[in-house]
Length: 618
Image (cartoon, rainbow, N blue to C red; front, side):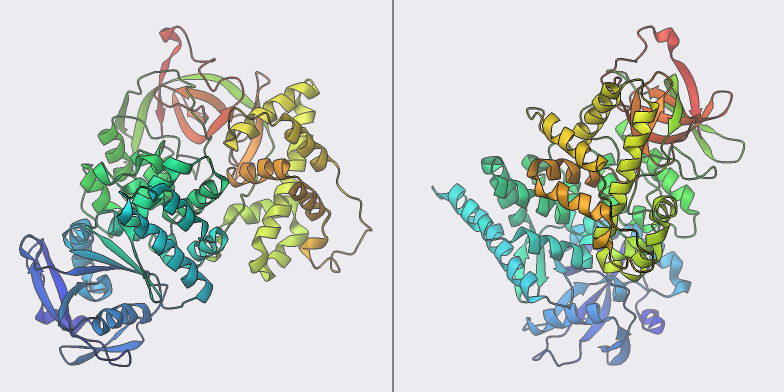
């Protein structure tokens, strides 16, 4: 396709190509278009396409100025949809064609990616194509969601609140959640800024269209008026599964405060976005580049020739300097080569961070400086108090509740934990990927049983470890403070401690995960609503968490990389304790943000400022 670009070169930094898409009379017609060049400051009205490539290779023929070229199926189908639904030529921007994708065109791609946010901001409409494979049940549920979205058009009606609730009750949350997990657009990082920066965005799935900002308005109104109702809570969580990162990214008057309360920082945007996928790891940053620049964050232009570490470091530094605060609670140990103050956004499954409103360092100001290191990297100079040691750690970690097929391919922690606790099931799990949720349920039971043994062994009394574990579980499960969950918690521990004794079977004959004794425990947990809620919320919020004990006797929880000999530190300006690893002199590496019982509200923060010290994090 490269030779078509010779006739339409991009001569200025704000030049873009547009397709002049010709109308079609039938879905059987070949997609036809011409390419033209415009500048963003003087461009005519055009539509920009937001879609997922889905790993497709160009295989469908289209005609560019009469010349045959190959495009992907999704690219062809969205252009054909627009062509069939138009009576006149229309101007369209779509990345796969408007940007030269050949390996030799890296300079052009760098330049176009750097202005991607401006392109979607300039478009008169962003068309979101949710794919070419249509599931009838998903389409019907999406139709119900579209009707709910348009309810806000009648927000002045006297019975608007009741209309919202009635339309919400018609949405099948389970089917909608299945759609969010099944349609790859919802799992891609690039699409966040494409919608957030749009003037208006229209979603297309099969024969259904949905206006995005209508959905945000109706969703926010419903939650603010009826958030106490179970139906609304379930729908809110489901919509957050699909659109959470997108609504967190909205700024200014379009921000829906009712449904983003507590999620108002750039750090939270990156925590959300890190769970989204990108084929190229640099795109975990470049996919949000235009959005971050629109916030006022100073960042270098995109450059795919730069080392990944440099790109992530520049972005982290830019965010810290823009926010004038530390961003360590998304950091955890990766390797001795990776700067530990820089989040590793490559993974779509980072370890969980402690949930809740904490003030471990009290209201302290987080001053920091960046210093050059001898190896050419950057270190972070902060004020901190090292208050203790990790005396012992469990090692094995909880695994959360979900995995996408793509996330499974790179989940090295899962395979490590399997080697520790379930070597007999590893091969079977690899053969039965569709049943991953059952395997995770069984593995979590095994880890929890090991955790109970660890806590009891390391505790001076049974009451101590049970109280500490209750504190960790209750807070991480984000339970309502008004609820007393001690009875369900006690029942949960009783169930976990009572592993059924089944007839001994040869490993080769135990072919079904449902036959395992841990699955029997999981079924017992599921029969008690309160116990099940506690278990599911905690395990869903504890990805890759292990348990540890400090030399003061307190128990804690954090990322699986925590080990005996690590230090517990409180960093000025960071609300959560940090487990760090001593390197030399006053130099440390971040291992994990952690929940440490008894110090989450500043109980261990030094009263005398002279007990604080400066340390360098590398």
